[in-house]
Image (cartoon, rainbow, N blue to C red; front, top):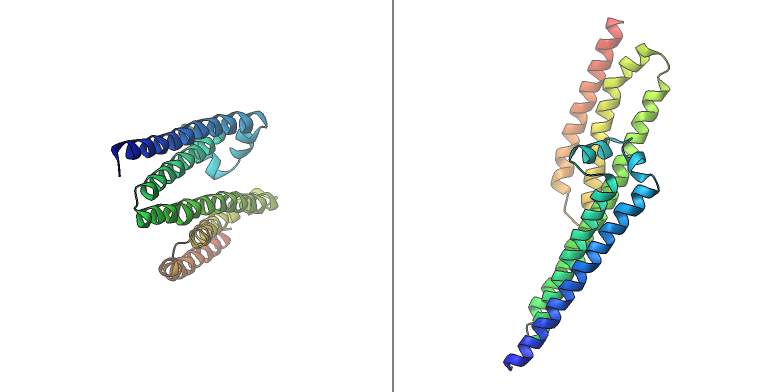
Length: 198
């Protein structure tokens, strides 16, 4: 294998990574601008996850744009490395790198989307519970109950998202059962205590 052959394929691999960098930058800019213009940033701030992202110093569009950009960077770098491995006669390494893209990168994308959508649905449900409490006294009674429900549903969402992302969550599921029952017991105790105080 001549040095010129190696240099040529190394250059092609660098070009693949460079294209990924440019595509990632373009996607980040497009998402940040597009989501800001349609009002997504303001809408997303209504939810806990949106407020947490805002406190970290990012608008929602900037955050999602950055996540998408880094995923694209990582994918193209792995593809460039896989191309170089195949070209230099190391197909096992190339297959391993393609496997990382197919399993871990794709799995993270599924986990991320399911987790974000799940958190939004949980927050929307809890806010609906709060709005159902017309009286202030009812609202005070429901507040701890609603927050415990929020925590339990967050745990369920994370477990489901990890499972869909390809991670074995059997141990986590077993740990989740006593945590859930503990939260339910605490929720009932707080509700009874507040009802007695009334």
